[in-house]
Image (tube, rainbow, N blue to C red; front, top):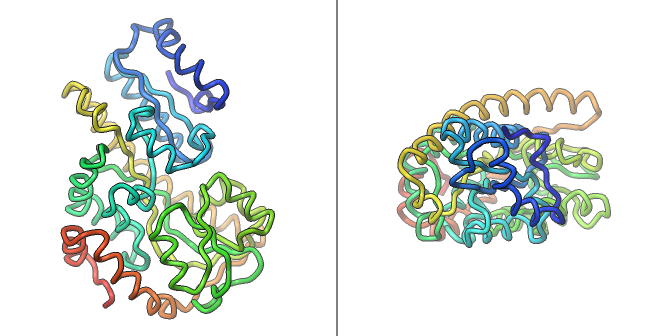
Length: 340
């Protein structure tokens, strides 16, 4: 049985642990046929981590012990962050990984569509679109990069808000000159350039230090990521932009996935689908509760002049229409209204 408290393994101990994991499993039950490593970049306290632990616990039971997996929060502390973990997935060094679409776009450009700013009017629309034809297209596109995705494969992280250290934001012009941390992905950098800010791409693990030493003035994330990572020790202002829904896609190494018997694929798919729907409900409620708690701690929330943001996005849409490809863009245009 996997437990959340047992899944955090230090980088120093990782090599030895990986070698002894099958022996440990054999002591508990019949030796597993498949041993997997599941990475994600969030802290151990998040709903994503707990959901992944539960998924693999259930899969171990339902497979009769043929599958065993270890879940590593915060990418097991590897140097290089999400991009390094993504490369490890493609190389088969790890077998499963969760990640938002923008870094995936370094290998599968169409995944940047998940972080197009101000395209989806609300989370329900985003979920409907990504669970539908658009998700099917992204699943097809990922195969060429050696990645398997799931039919319902996007955990929820929430809606992204822009947060700053020293001043509130009321309109797009307030971002001019600010140094804003972004993930290591072009779509985020283009977003901030369009708003007159300077993007500073950093792995998430480096963000708390960058806020503390003043090398960045702010960042954007859903509430729980900021809270669970202690970012509100530095951040003081939250601008409620809801500019993008933040899905965390469950990815598998394609060769690993194709090597699995059909019955084990079915077990994994079934557990992933049910767990994602549970996690989405929990995350939605948790983000609402955290917003109220942060108000009580003195964090200042502002509702900005959103049209001032929207009018800056047209160059971003023109650029990314070409990059994500015509197949994805046509599907997107049938589902939502994109400003032009």
